Amino acid sequence: MTNLCFTTTVAWDQSNGFGCASLGLPGVCGNDEKKTVARQIPAESVTLTGNYAEILAGAKAVAEKGKVYAAIVVFGNAGGENAFLADLYKIISCPVVGGGAAIDGATGRKGLIPGGGEGAVLLFTDDRFAYEVETQCIHDHIIKTCQITTADPRTILTIDGEDGAAFLANKKAELGLKQEDFEHLTLSDMDDVNAHLSCVDGQIKSGRDVCKQMKLRYVKQETVYETMRAFYDDEDAIVFGCAGLSGLLEKPLDTKSLGLFLFGEVCTVNGKPEFGNLMLSKLKIRRK
Image (cartoon, rainbow, N blue to C red):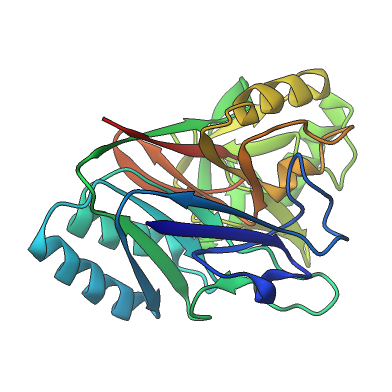
């Protein structure tokens, strides 16, 4: 039996099970309430915690004993998520979902459950069940493919040869977006996994590793709620969505799923896991 437990950021230390803090709980409450949601899954699993090296060593030991069918990864906002997932996939070679633990805005506390290290991983090892993952990018309008230069994996210098901040400012003006809006307009990798951008001291920062070539993409506000509602409307699923997307909602999501708003999402695309932002990802587990 596997116990999952997710909480609002003000209650994460009251939980009991594998999970992390969410910035509010869709269909349950906003983030100002002390709430936990739990679900028991009859499938057998193994929990690994600690720093990345310790988790990878543990995953190798589990994989050497038998097949891993799916995994949930929660991150403690330590950075290096993309590289960690690439290393983990080499070991377990299975679908992965999850995301980054939400941070309490008032205290700055990271809501990682369990362990409190760089991350935690739940490996499903039960062959009596089928594991299905689904990923969606709601930014369905691709404006163009851009060439990117960087100072480091998460700092953009130029986009198509133009200063990154100036490039995005001009595009927002063309679209009628506010300059502080980094949610309707964003960049994705070539597999359609988004980055959540911000401007810090005049430079564009990303919540995930960026690539040399990325798609500039946009979502219209009038499509946001219905697209997200349809994805979350899955009572049998564990749904990992971005806290940045929740800020676009004009009313609370009505859902019976175990829904979450995290700081980054683990998406499985082309069979491999990737850490992204402004994404939707979910896992369904059913008995064969």
